[in-house]
Image (cartoon, rainbow, N blue to C red; front, side, top):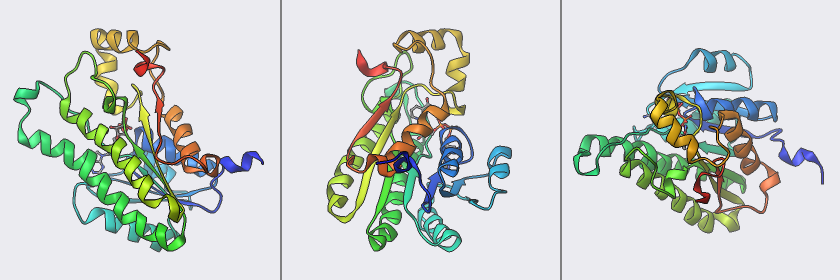
Length: 252
Ligand SMILES: NC(=O)c1ccc[n+]([C@@H]2O[C@H](COP(=O)([O-])OP(=O)(O)OC[C@H]3O[C@@H](n4cnc5c(N)ncnc54)[C@H](O)[C@@H]3O)[C@@H](O)[C@H]2O)c1
């Protein structure tokens, strides 16, 4: 046994939502661990553009809610790097407000981005993984898949993330005997674009931190290390799990 089990040498990863936040941090760490990474989001950022100047990274733009995008991303990964070992199913959006006023357009946006698209992306990735007889999928869920957030109201988002945790468990069951592991990561409050407005709002931020036993927010890099563990052979006997990384948020 050596620490090399945490490395991804020779592996190829597809990372959705890879232009910033948790996805970008994960791509950087995977690269350091030896992986080649195809990143996708609707558009590049300066940071993802700089990363993709390296030969082990590529960026393919696409709206993940377009039914054609998942297949295009898998094809691009195979064309560019010749295989597909790891999926980090990370792209997502948050939205909230009173349940009784949450209109269909917003409901569709949450569910199509956070549930339907990850389903389609995972489905597209499973096919080459089955051909290879191996693969590891890391779906990004949330503590919102377990609890009601305070103080903001967000039934649709929380429902989409709970569904991701269950999709993870049932996919793991289906593919365990064929060399494909499927796990989820459930972050707490992480300092990214998605959460930054709340973190910069003194009242909201106070409630979030008071409800986090560690008393601070998480950093994208702290999610990347969890994703690396789940993606790597270090987690060779882990499948169907949701790893909660939340500073203790859901302990109470
Ligand atoms: N930040 C948090 O506190 C937190 C907590 C729990 C879970 N999460 C989850 O982590 C994941 C990453 O979010 P983040 O925190 O890095 O926030 P972020 O807003 O920085 O990143 C979201 C990513 O998803 C991409 N994306 C959104 N809609 C898309 C679409 N239609 N097509 C293509 N790409 C799209 C964005 O371009 C971006 O790259 C999400 O699934 C989110 O729900 C975040």
